[in-house]
Image (cartoon, rainbow, N blue to C red; front, side):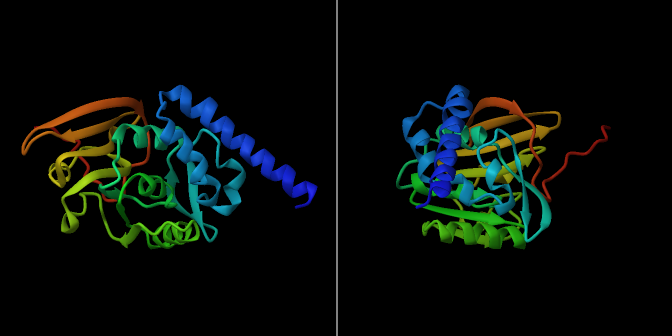
Amino acid sequence: MNAAVASADLALEQARFNMIEQQIRPWDVLDQSVLDLLSVVRREEFVPPQLRALAFVDMELPLRVDGVDTGEKMFAPRMEARFLQELGLKAHEHVLEIGTGSGYMAALLAHKAQHVLTVEIDERLMRFGRANLARAGIGSVHVELGDGARGWAARAPYDVIMVSGSLPVLPDGLRSQLKIGGRLGVVVGTGPVMSAQVITRVSERGFDTLRLFETEVKALRNAWQPSAFQF
């Protein structure tokens, strides 16, 4: 390894360390297994190549595939880590992710759970995410092309559902795709203020909602929009 490569690798690891210690840990992400995982799943290998230098910056990153802007973005690193912590995944659990994007969130989920089914509506991103996951050697994720804005009922119920995008309102059928004891990570509302939540199914008809923080992220394509008219 020549000096230039070694220096670049050192800078990359320092940036990763700074992301964990300066962005993520101060955001109440204190689960050491989550913090350690951020060094195992290498975020820079999932972002678009031209944005590799920004992989650890505290911002959403646009997802450009083959030079084309898909209009979608990756969550900021601290949001990914906070959801991962609060969902409390277990090794035997089966997960649905809605919105594959780069495949990074699916990769994090896969390291915690037994299996992840991730659904992506954009064929370019489906291929991009699938290729990133394959290159990272993550075999416990299955990527499907489709519209998951109302969930993926054909494979329900799930132990965990992660919505990697926002929903103006929560569709009635989405929570019902959880097993009892299952958790749903989702951002709900319309800008400028949305609520990041973890919803737990505690009984056949009972749900508890933990509100984590306020944010603003792009809505899923085809997400159901409430009517602007009131009668």
